[in-house]
Length: 69
Image (tube, rainbow, N blue to C red; front, side):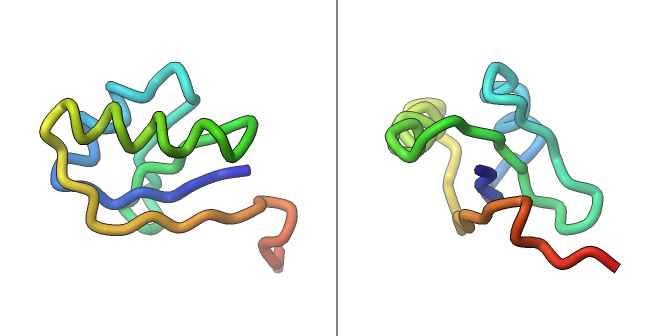
């Protein structure tokens, strides 16, 4: 599963969450984070809050559900 997070500092967010395979998406500018289970999402948010990064939005999606052309 993947979450797309838009924050006050997306580049820094991607760096802090690199161990989750995080990267800034060129398509939407959000940080896409690959996670293994839903229990990891609160930990991801906690890391960002403790680093004083504002979270503007979080979207969860399954990459297998994205329509391909």
